[in-house]
Amino acid sequence: MTTTKPNHIGRKIARIRELRGMKQETLAEQLGISQQSISHIEQSENLEDAKLEEVAKVLGVTKEAIENFSEEAVINYFNTFNDKVSSSNFGHQNTCNFNPLDKVVELFEENKKLYERLLQAENDKVAYLEKLFENK
Image (cartoon, rainbow, N blue to C red; front, side, top):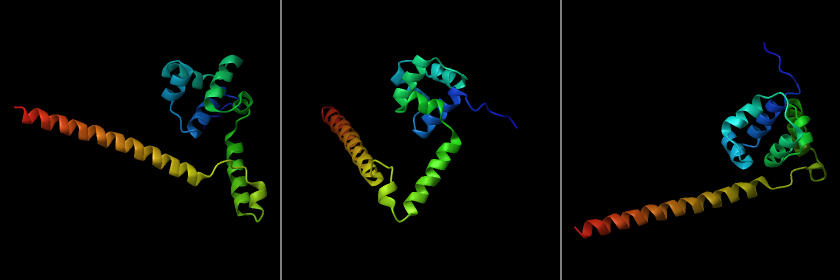
């Protein structure tokens, strides 16, 4: 069994990035660096403060959140959140600042618009090809 150092900044960055559903390529693009540089950062035990601030900003967290991040804290947070959901005074303890259903609807609408644009592009191609064949 391999023991991991609890203060490995690179692993914390990687885990937060993963929890945010972000790929290394996306983080790299937003920081203006290569994906290989992100890989190197995530393998580094330490990171200079200025770079850590930049990464934190792109990940939507504070530098301190990265430094103090722990898998146990995340698990405890979600367990606590689930306990709060099932408690009778849910409204007073809810820390969620958005409606998940609204997010699903928003994503559906974005995907619908994308699908409609793709469908229109395909229809335009078919019309163009039909026009080419008519001219022959």
